[in-house]
Length: 224
Image 1 (cartoon, helix red, strand yellow):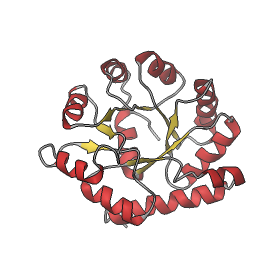
Image 2 (cartoon, one colour; image 1 turned 45 degrees about the vertical axis):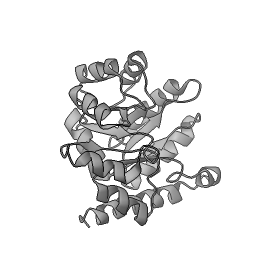
Image 3 (cartoon, rainbow, N blue to C red; image 1 turned 120 degrees about the vertical axis):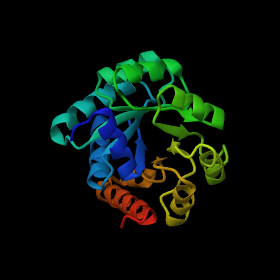
């Protein structure tokens, strides 16, 4: 798969759910990410948390470049340009942030990397769009107003593409509410990749849950 900016954005929208994951163990990361890709969600948001997270990201991204080129590794929790640059050098194909940072936007634009900054108001969303961000992250999704906030923004700004994280669950009721409000994708973490599944190393179970969620989003969108 060609991993240019437009291809990555299209892939994010197509799969609908973006697994959000971090673990300090490289092998566990490889297994979980492979499970997500096999379940229909090859775009992964690796969370920049923990000591030496960038080193783990490098090893995992290098692995998938040859082991499964379908995988598109992005990185989340990016709050400054130097950290964004480090991850781009290590193979990141998209950036996600809890905040709007103009320096990160400029760096990503220069390298043609999609940047989804965290926004909590119509003004922040508009500023992110001014900076060239195609998909904005609403964060924390449930705390800033949930689906009602999405609907309110989409009224006067119908061109907006929103990907919330926080508050979107992998069940039909939640997916119907959020996607019905107009989002194009949603980041999902521990409710998609549960601690129970990780403890049991139930990678087949993770893949099944991801597949069910991808299929459910397609059904809600009327594409299944």
